[in-house]
Length: 237
Image (cartoon, rainbow, N blue to C red; front, side, top):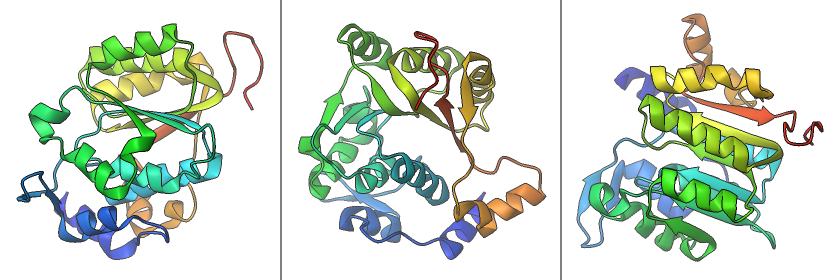
């Protein structure tokens, strides 16, 4: 695992427009708490996978984004940097453990990068928030699921996300190497979803080529487009 992380950093670079806050976090591999103390960066989506997520967002230019799981805010900063933030762009983030487990550092990083006032943050659980969003008639173009990874929670988040997804929208999940995530992923093609390929140039990057040679997952993040809208029977855009 250590060798793979080093290879990813050696062969991949941050794109133009990367926020200073994000660049400093990745360079130092540390985050700064509210009291000014530094903590090691941990449990974040790795660089390669963040770049893949960012590329999917740049390609699709979603206006309505939902992310489950904030932690230190690394993936959120990547997605925020990719958005054009045109009129009508909305970004909802759910993380009930932001204060308890992450010392609110993810939210602080969004404040430091100037994105916090553009994001609606929910401190309740996804089981509580997602039904409220459905009841409110919300629809999202891009949903990233990276919350709790037990079988019940992953499947619950996917099922709620499907109900919230606009026709042609995308559900992305992190940690496909975990059985609970793989099980949820396996159910998506049967429900009208088609997997998105790893975007170029990352499909040709050294880490992905090595994984392909080893017959392992090309990326620990996967994304699926809702090609058929089961509510209306129309093909998604």
